[in-house]
Length: 179
Image (cartoon, rainbow, N blue to C red; front, side, top):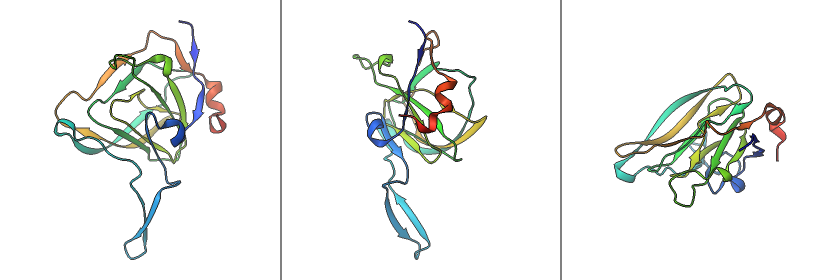
């Protein structure tokens, strides 16, 4: 297989719905609470972690910038729970996902999709969604992460280091106006 450069699409609920939910304030239900001093943007994503006695946990991840061109090296999934990422700074970042193959056991690399997420957008991957580990565009970037802790195997990894799939710097330069 020759070199494959992924086209970056703008992240939206419509084009991401097969993989999970986009977490953003746009279109969210707004509830005024605390004697009118707070607006709650309600139920931005569902948390699905209860399988095999799992419980939801909140963590902070810090992603480091990968060298250009950004080479995809690994796809992973969490078969027992959803996993949500929301940036803690207003910097865009990259989301890479794909569907499972026909057996459901490996990623179908012919379906890889790449999305540019604004700094005010997060994602919640559906249980079992293949995705690449964090890809940040700054030197480092922190994310609030909601996922599952508990018994059972909740991580499958699939190496794609031997493939030449990358996100070239020319794609990233214009990433704010993609699609």
